[in-house]
Length: 166
Image (cartoon, helix red, strand yellow):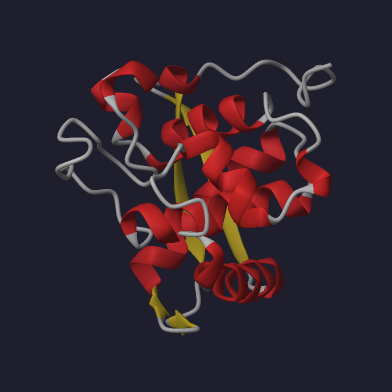
């Protein structure tokens, strides 16, 4: 059963999100811009009804892929990779991959296909989704992700999800 079977299906190209409120200036070395993106990733996971662990894995993955910055360039392994999760063209339209909320939805849709993920180490879950060359690539980001998620959950912020073009 899909994690969001009880939630309305989200089409990633139909929404975007903005963050307002008292976003911390920095947490565990991550600055305000990066924390805004993490808040959007968390909101997308909440909208899909995913667990706190899954949402933290998503933040960890974006840390490891793009340092929580929406990047408009790839690397040697994926010259067409874009966005927070460095998603390649096969993941979806450029505009979606370059939108923090849309790219998070794409990540969560792929995450939902990882069987038995609750029994796996977070880095291996991220690797199963991203297929990084190094399955342990994300491991150093776990503690930071936990700290960022805790700080954002304690902060007085609002993430407003809006229809694209609305």
